[in-house]
Length: 320
Image (cartoon, rainbow, N blue to C red):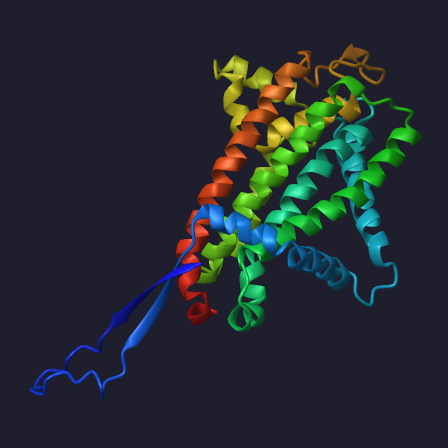
């Protein structure tokens, strides 16, 4: 690790006729880290045991002293799905067959993204004591939040598996590889965004509250509780190309998961006696190009986030 040390001398006071004596004055030393992105990646790998330990700590702390413990990670999404099922399917009549499976599939991706970003946003601030006393790659704190969210993703996937068994839905195995690439893309994108906002939050604490609002709007901009084709048809009516909607990086991943596990593009609705257009009828490559775009954007964002984090962390100790 290289570091640039700048020495700033105290400014002369008006009327001070004495010459500056370096032996008497106390200089201000600012240490600005100059660690390349490649070195930062190497440091993250070198401290992978610490990253693993922080992930375990976050999971244990979240359910510490609770009676159900890790079961809350299963009960929470199950209750969320039940409430949305009653509201959108029974009350509002969304018309989507097997709405519980459709909803669970989209929520699985969204919860991973939202939980990781919200945890990462305050990761550095919440661990101020650790940051000021121990020397380690601070971006690991944001990565630990995304890592713990990925563990909860596995727990919540159990809920989806139960729904698939109960409703006797067979996933589209030919699309599974696209969903796995989409999962990697979502993790990379969330990691990059998490590192970036964690560094900014140290200087602007309002960013945490702003992210809560932005994520709420982001959720409704993602086809989790409504069908993608519904928005695509609206865009077509207004002569807006559908790729504009796909610029939302979470959308291609959600679509890949829905195509794999919901496995229906235009099912017949018994309730309305009509065919409901839900997902594009294109083959796996259409979905692949979408998640590949998210992966490329995620890698670029991750590199930019590491670079920006390096410029921000120089004065973390003073700001915390």
